[in-house]
Amino acid sequence: MVGGSQLENANPLIYQRSGERPVTELEEDEEVTDTIDGREIFDLIRSINDPEHPLSLEELNVVEQIRVKVNDEDSAVSVEFTPTIPHCSMATLIGLSIKVKLLRSLPDRFKVDVHITPGTHASEHAVNKQLADKERVAAALENSHLLEVVNQCLSARS
Image 1 (cartoon, rainbow, N blue to C red):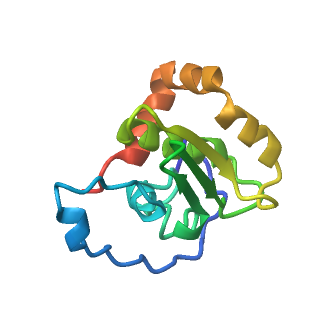
Image 2 (cartoon, rainbow, N blue to C red):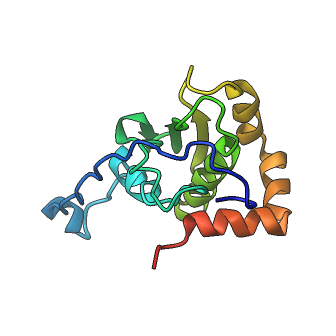
């Protein structure tokens, strides 16, 4: 529950988590340059906590591997996320959490684009505009309360 208010989606559908990706011999070879792929990005964001439920974004089907695109050569990562309901007021916070996790985890050379899956949210355009604006993202992260909530979303569950 956020701010003591009622949950917007009190009974969300819960999805099965995908298994851990097996490490291949090629990935363990220190002589081979390992490119970043969609599964690696998905593995970084799948366990982000939902701000309203004690569930991960993967368990709520907010993030899916098929909605992650990576072009390692061009240093570009794109993630589409799907809010659980069309009027989810947490959509910007969820997108911000995904973006922060990737910015903290990936080399600086990557351009990170996080946006709502087209047609899945009533304020899709406004949320996407906020998430794409570097100055607005930076300003949001200067807000200590908002940063604390993002860090809670990113923290490992005990």
